[in-house]
Image (cartoon, rainbow, N blue to C red):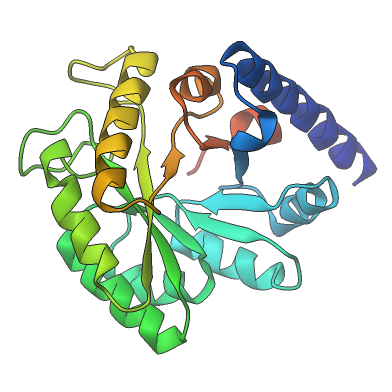
Length: 239
């Protein structure tokens, strides 16, 4: 366990240095960017070590992994983010432990999340996931609503009991005009964020950037970066 703690501490220090350098280069304060460690495929013991090392935001993308992990770490002061594509039949479970759902991309999901949050007596933060590779009315290959659907979904979240509109999220697209152009993708997301805040000033969270492109996200203005591999190591292949 000591070896694992040393390994995670060293990885975390390297990621912290990258974020700090990116903030300095962009003329931003380090405290403007929150690190979310994506712990998918890794055990609850790693989450406990990360907490010891000062991590307070963790993310998961599959409820079947996240639910038992969150239960095993319920005594820790952690903010749990759900970042994967979410099916409505998993919403009730996710609403029992997640603090923020970053992958809200359709009205049916908003309705289900609201009902589950009210049932649980909790408030759920919601990010609208934006698909920069989606045409009008479509969803992206990796989830997300087309840009022209942002405002309608945002209004639905804001008027739904138990939900709080926190902002926007994107995953750098693998296809379309922004494929391989992460900085341009994140700049576009920031444009959408500015527009969103005209009607929803409190929705100022922008989640973008992962292990390979966190610098581009910080440069664009992201408030949260989602880093997994760079902290936890290369993920084991799922069978």
